[in-house]
Image 1 (tube, rainbow, N blue to C red):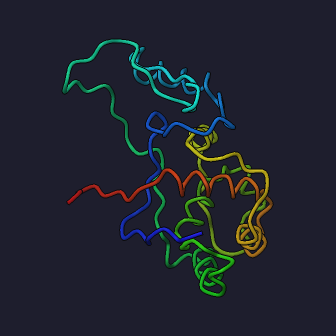
Image 2: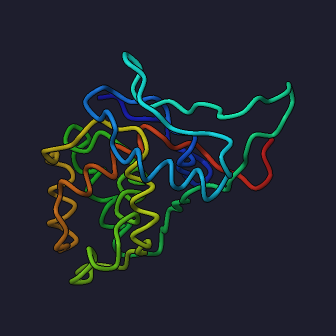
Length: 191
């Protein structure tokens, strides 16, 4: 696979409600949860449903005029490089050591690692530190577009092993896929 360009600003995962239609394999993944979140956060303006041949779509439940603001929400999660963190340094070293095994830039793997819950980060990393996310935030991240993951890559297995993490490499791989397919650069002052 080709490596996405290295972002110059922090990576930012897209919002829950803005996720792209997904493959039929995921069908109604978290559909009730997404609709509950949409009702709680946006009233009954929109609803997520499964459309044949498209996957999940967001459908308006009321009429809107051109220019109406349907909803807005902040970034779901922002991942920043941490050049002084021993875990990030180890990750950079791994990625530089074998670009065939590690096809992505360190920040992509870092974003996935910093999307784990406190429970998943027990025991703590052997090297450096990782920032845990609340379970609710991780659940929203996993609602974003990505194909189902049943196996981890050699890269993710090596990272989990190097950092001494107790979490399943498959979970890290799934978070990595969600980040790769749903994030973009974020800036508080867009140009």
